Length: 101
Image (tube, rainbow, N blue to C red; front, side, top):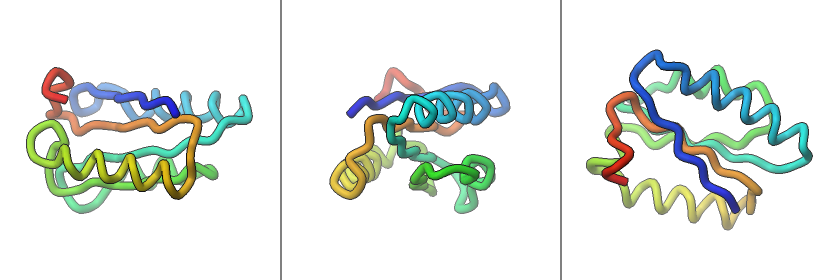
């Protein structure tokens, strides 16, 4: 199982990159899950990415690099046990610090 973290400022194109990666992974016959990390409770990105057979999980209410790291680890474990995907892509919030993960 490969895990890819995608970070960047708000509006930098994270969702666009993930959408294109998802298309490539699926067209290669591999399975994919996506973890969305959102500050708020509602995820617009999830609505955009739900157009395919990809399983999407949202971790809301905080940045995984600061306070929800345990939630991220648990989400990854759950996805592995339930779906055993070839890939998991984690989209971090626009305020995440990758070095803190």
